[in-house]
Image: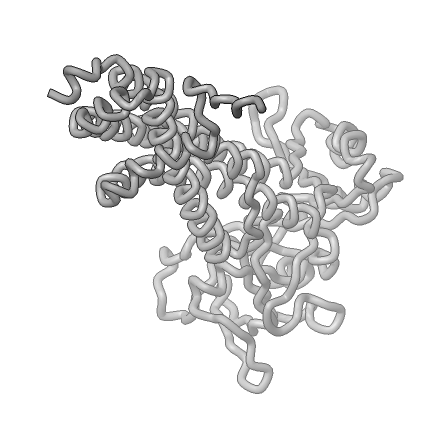
Length: 402
């Protein structure tokens, strides 16, 4: 009868290594929690910094999908001689001749005209609001919506009525339209009735800060000369670059280079790019916090080795190898940092979800940020615990037990 094989004393199963590593954490729970807290803060910052811009980008993508990226705006630029140019009166009609264009309209700034709640208010109190002459198809082209009341239409655009942009209405203290008791404002020396208040318009922020009146009324009462200051053009999505290339020459053939053509959706995307630059900065700060947490773990493990000299000496005297001692302390360091990383990921998820909810964004949690948070924290733990583990393994049993 053969004797049973003696197990190799130089190796420990992974479960035993993890058990030994967890033992050191259980014996000093407060120290373990405080050490893991530094790792958790760093990982939480990194997860939030990656997830919040992803949520913002998704919200921007959803917004652009709803608003459309096929809107172009044309405004007067500078002529070859350096002076300002003017768009022709029929600029919008000429833009409609371009085959892929599905809609075109224009607004024109009414000069030397202010809007006030009362004729008792000084003319200098403009509240930063412009008065624009507009056509009834403006909202159809720019994708705007009426918050309260109605927009300019065939029934009212020839009368002294005004529609307020969202910012203008807020500055004038008008948040809704009551048909039974219509609000009047003093505009260019005449009383105008407020017909409607618009919702916010991200693709046309200049309209948000304007008061809109009918083109005919603007010419009759306010001295508007009929020349537009902004032409809005909506085109087929696939043909936007082509329309953009010919729009200036089409609406102003006398001075095609004196027309500035922009795509409002590009401005929103540029804002998102600016936010991503700040995100990179905060990501670096999160990395610094994680580094500080790693230093804290290393310090904790060094102190742990000094305090547990007798335990190390006893295990060495009972046959534990240097490799096993090294594995025990390295496992403890990795577990400590890994649990801190896991807690940091959870904190980062909660922070991202809370902030996204407050902004009305969808909460987007990149899988790379979540898995990478735990992996990076474990790596930091391995690096931070390498020196203490090597130091513990080098302690001679006789010196450790003395």
